[in-house]
Length: 299
Image (cartoon, rainbow, N blue to C red):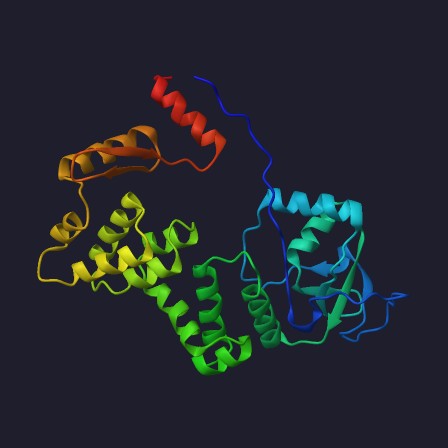
C-alpha cells in the first residue's frame, strides 16, 4: 500500500501587548533611553526568561519558521522587557520572538523597556498571553483564573481589564470544572467551546464522559450535543440516553472499540436506521496514517 509523503505545514505567530502591538521605528537606538515608547537594542545574553510566562511549551516547527523569517527580514516587532539592573533585563512579553531570534543567530534585538514590579509583571504576562490568537479555550480559562487568584481581581474587574463581557469571563472559567478528559478534548480542539458548555449541563462527570464519547463518535454538532445533554437529564439511565441519541447498538460500539485499539486511533461509525453506514478512521499526521496502513497490512 502506497505511503504518504511528509509535507511542510505553516503556522502563523502573533503576539500582542497593550499599546505596543505596532512597532515604532527608532532612528538611533539608545542604550540609556528607558521610556516605554522608545525602541532600544539589547544584547540577548543580558535577557532573562520571564518566570511568570503562562505558556511553558513552544512549537519547535513554528519557532523555526519564525527564525527563518527573522533571518530574512529581521525582528520587526520588538520584545518587551523590564530592567533588573544595569546589565540585566527580564522578558515581559515576546518569548517566542526571543527564542526565534536566538535560533536565527542574532546577538541583539529591538526592545521596549518598561518599569514593573513582580505583580505588574505577572499581570502583563497573563494579559499578553490572553491576547494571543492561537490559544485554546482551556489556556484562556487558566489565564483568567490566574489573574483572578494572583492579581486579586473580581470577574467584573477582570472583564473591564481585558475588554470582555463579564459573562464571557465566567463562561471560560466554568470550563475548568470539566473533568480532565473533556478539558483535553477542548485543548486538542476535538470539541468546541459550545460543545463544552453543553456538556457542563450534565450533572455527573460519568455522564459528561459518556456524552463526550458519543459526541466524538457521531461528530455531533453543538445543537445536537445540547439535545444529548438534555437527554441525560431525563429519568432514564445515562446509558439509555446515549443509545437513544444514536443508531449504534452495543455490538457496533464493541466493534468501534476493537478497531480503535487495533489501529491506535479514533474510529467513528455513521449508521442509519436501515443499517447502511460508513466507518471513519481519524489520523493527525502523515506518520500516523502510515502507521495505520502498516497495521492494516499486518506489518
